Length: 205
Image 1: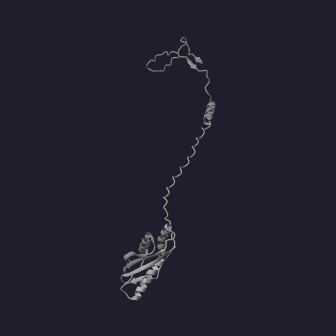
Image 2: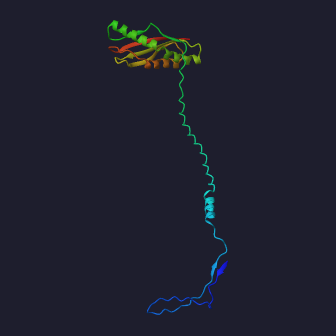
């Protein structure tokens, strides 16, 4: 670093005075050396180049997004409980209504015949009910056979005032009672007044 030393004390000071009524006094200021660094200052071009290098630095690598997580599959809906299907009850044998039935009622004979004919057709159409009763008896006794009389009194609204088993040759009380109960499921006609009847049925394998 080079220093510039001012003149020594032997060097006369230059006294600056101006024309004024007030006299000016000369003041001595101690001389201080002026030092300059020998290190050269950076040039403008080098500063521009350095700033360009800073501005041209490669950008940081982009952050890779995490792969999307697969969506969870919804839980399967609970399956409804299976409803048991009732199998039809088996039928067996042959059941038919005999023509030797007895009828009674306070009405003209023609009216009694008409009502008896409607009842006979209703009983014949319900033969599957009696064949189911007969199938139970045949499962216990394959040679079971016989006749069953069902006695009943029918009201004018089609309901039973009396329903009971009559004389029977079929040797199975369960089948006989099942045949009597089956009459409750038959849609009977409506007579003008109470109508009594004995219906003999034949059960054959």
